[in-house]
Length: 410
Image (cartoon, rainbow, N blue to C red):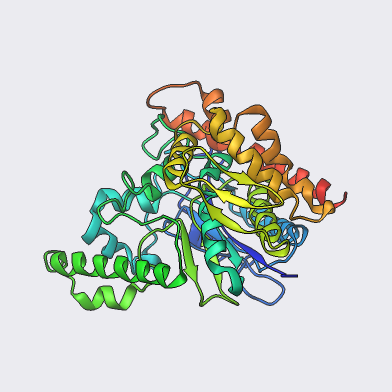
């Protein structure tokens, strides 16, 4: 029986008492309370002076992961109270502007050379979560393909219904702006996010992307006052591009890193981690075969097999999730089957961590949809209205902490 572990990279943003953006990350990170029992920092720097990131330990149980996050929340609360700010888990609202953190500019100039200043602005200001799941060496291809089929689950995690330009229009701005291979920041050198038939194919995909970036940078760097050495010093296979799932054999026993989701409240972040861990545990521990179909609209997640949708269907469900969240029955039905399947891979005392996702599927509303309903559907929003979205997420986070504490004691 495998004992896969899961870990989180969890980004949030600092806000003043009026819920506008506070570029106080350096104060937050340098605060004496930002230390764990071993004297190590709890929170780390991110792309802007607005953001901070918590990196969890790897955990084999969701209850242990939840405890890790709750401990970090206590630290965040103490620092935030001392500084007079709130540390809010929302991807972007435009209630102010995050200033690029000068300590992390070692790759931003490279993004600007290849993709332009506007693309850099879109990339750097949107917060998200990354989930690391242990690699299971005998079934790496099945793992990668099965995780690829979770892409439509962006609909369970969206909190970016209001863009950094304070515009409405889609349910998940983050996926559209960053990860979408046709419209995203990196569309000039689009990501190949298809299924694979071998790990060698995945490795070659990473090499080809790296070489394409290097070629483009080499052709344009001189006009920006840079040399090729800058790229070689700051970019490698592991940090070039923005694939939905990043192959990380260098981390622990090796991980697959899922990178598509908005940041969100604790209960939803833990629910997504429970979804990923339960889904993988069910496949691996019950030796369920994984294949993918050629027939549009066909899929199955059962005790006998996992039949992944073909790539056209997967793109269709992802587009529905990005545009409409959980409001379309096709995507909702697909994700409900995935959640039900993942539940079977969790111990009974940890299945309640999936309740937030189940409730969203029942209502057809995710957090982004709730924000739009609260603000009213408009084209552009005012700065004050965007701040209201941050306040809403702050209150949701307080509720989610209480939810997790209750589940922890069931």
